[in-house]
Image (tube, rainbow, N blue to C red; front, side, top):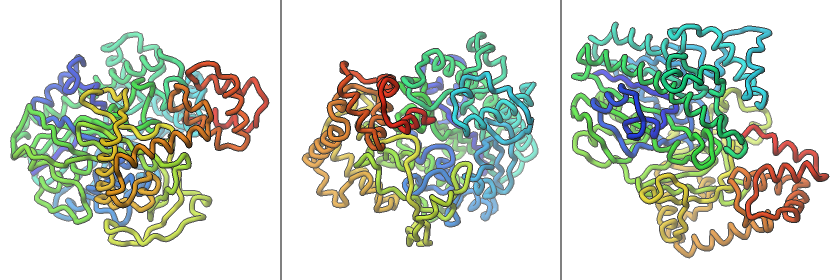
Amino acid sequence: MKAVILMFDTLTRNKLPNYNPDIGGMPNFRRLGEHTVKFDNFYVGSMPCMPARRDLHTGRLNFLHRSWGPLEPFDDSVFEILKKNGIYSHLITDHQHYWEDGGATYHNRYSSYEFIRGQEGDLWKARLGFRGEEHLDSWQKAEPLRRNMIRHDQINRSYMVEERDYPQARCYQAGLEFLAENHTEDNWLLQIESFDPHEPFFVPDRFKRMVDPELLNNTDDWPEYSSTERINNPGKIASGQKHYQALMMMCDEYLGKVLDFFDEHDMWQDTLLIVNTDHGFLFGEKEWSGKSVMPVYNEIAHVPFFIWDPCSKRANESHDTLAQMHDVAVTLLDAFGVEKTPQMTGNSLLPALSDNSCVKENAIFGYFGAHVSITDGRHVYMRGSRTPENTPLYEYTLMPTRMRRMFNDEELRDAALSPGFAFTRHTPLLKLPASAGFYSSYAHGNLLFDLEKDKQQEHPLYDPALEAAFVRMLSQALSATEAPADEWLRLGIPTDPEHITEAWVVEEHRQRTACMEELLGPLHTLKMHPDTRTLLLEIAAYPGGKTLIQALVETCSSHELRRQDIVSCYENGHFEPALMSLFNKPY
C-alpha cells in the first residue's frame, strides 16, 4: 500500500465546483471528483491550524484540553506509529507554523521531511532597513505583532520573482520529485501540505488575470479577521474574495500535476489518495471576515474532503456520513493494516467506503475556550459560556508553548498539577489558568440552526425542547472525549442529563436575559452585531465602564447600536482614558 495526502490550508467548501455548481473553472478539482468519493458531511474538529494537525496525528480531539500547541509527550502520532511499523512517511510543507514554538514537535514524527520557506510572516529572509510594507493599509492599521508578520511577508515576496519561486510551486515540485523517485517502491506515505490558499492570497499575476486584471494593481490580498462593520470597507471584502479565487486557480493547477502523475504511472491501482483541509473562511457572510474571531459557522466548519481507496475502488460518488479530521488518522492506520491505539477516538473511513456505513452519529468541534459546537448533520448547536467571565477555564499540558512563544512567568505562576486523563495514560499534567482567545461566546449566546431550512445560518432557532436534546447529546460527547470537569461548569451543563429538560432551557434563557439587562441596561434590547455586544460587555466589566454605558443609554435614540456609536459617545464625553484600549484591540 502507498498513500498520498494533499492537504491545503483554508480550502473553503463553497468556493469549490464540486460543492457549489455556481463556481466556474477549476477543471482539476472537477477531475478529482471523478476519481474519488466526495464527503458531503465532513466537519472540522479542533480549530484552527495546529490544533487540527494534532487531531490528524493523534486520532482524537484536543481543543477541549488546551489551546494551540505542539504534540505532547503522551500523544500517539499515526505517522510515528507507521514509521515503527515499517511504513516510510515523508512530509513536504511550506506551512511555517511547523517551525514555530507551538508546532515544533510535529515534523519529527515523520521518517523525513522537507520545509519550503517563505509563506505568510515566515522569519525567513533578512533585509535590514526594508520599508516596503509601510504603504499597505493592512500594515498601517495593524498592532506590532501583525506588523512584524506583514513586514517579513513583504521581504519574503521580494525573493519570489518567477512562479517557480513561490512556496506552493516549490512544495509541489518537491512532491513530484518524491513520486518520481519512489513510486515503484511500496509501503510509504507522502504528505504534500500547502499553506495556500491561506491568506495572504499571494499569487502570480497570470492567475490574477484569469479572475480580474484589476487585481494586478490591488494590494488588498491579506484580509482581516474582524466584523465587516469594523472593517467598514465592502470593496476590501470583495477584492479579498477575488484574490482568494485567483489563488484557488493556482491550487487547482498544481493539484492537476499530481493527478497527471497518478494517471501516467497508474497509481490508482495501489495508492490511497486523500485531499483535505483544516478549515474554511468567511468572506463577509453573516457580517464577518476571516476565522477565529467568530463562532465556527459552516463556511469555516463544513469542509471539503475527497478520498480514493484502491481497495473499494469507488469513484465519482458522494457519501453523506459525518466525519472529521481525527477519523483520517485512524483511516491511515487502517489502510496500512495497523491497529489504532486505545487513546484514539476517531473511526476509519474505509468501512464506510466499502459498505456505505455511518462513521458517527454526531460531531463536535470548536476553538479552545470558545463555543463548543455539535452537529448531527441536520442541525448545528453552538454552546457558549455560562457567564461573561467564561470561567472556569484551564489548559492541560506538559508543553507550555503558544503559537510563537513560550508561556510567560505570569501564565505559569498559578500552575497546579493535575492527575491527567486516561488518554494521557494518567501522566500528571500542568493545569494552567487560561483565556479564550479572540472572541466572547457569551456575547453570541447559545445558537441552534436547522441547516435544512436555514443553510446560511442566519436565523437561530428558539426551540427549548430541541435545544435540551442537543445539550444532552453534547454532554455525552464531552464524556466520550474525556473533557475536563471544568468544561461542564464553563458551559453550564448539568452533569446529570436528567436535569437537562425543556424547562431548564427556558430558565437558562431567562437568566441570560436578566444578566444582560443587569450589565447593559436598556441597551441589551437593541439590535447590534455580536462584535459590538462583545465591546459593550468588555466596557461594562472595565473600571469606569459603567459611566460610559449609562451615557450610551441616555444618548441612544435608535433601535440599533453600532460600534461607531460607542466610539463617538466616548470621544464626545469625559470617560476613563484607559477605556480607549478596548477600542484598539487587534481583533
